[in-house]
Length: 143
Image 1 (cartoon, rainbow, N blue to C red):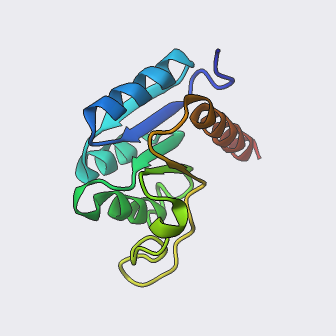
Image 2: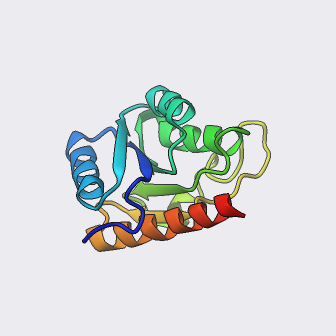
């Protein structure tokens, strides 16, 4: 199935090699250009350097790095407009009870990610979310 947005760049921040390979292969096979990172620092650097169209984050990166990366993206003037898909083995209601999930380190509220999927995500569901968010992003950039 070809993607509706073949040129879109997707940053995947995932520390589990098998999941990273799965996501990268799935996105590539559907016309996206994935960029992979394994840590908070690498993910933030690639987000700043590459300015992806969408970011997929493993919320459960070691040391709460997934949450901290999300906070960094949402509080950055350069990155806050990029849609984020959070992946986690936790259901969303449990995740959002985590102290850093809804507030920045300075205590300011931060919005929920555009999508939240449980791991491992179903391929069709993930692609549907990615296509929807990339289409919204493209529309916003034209306005």
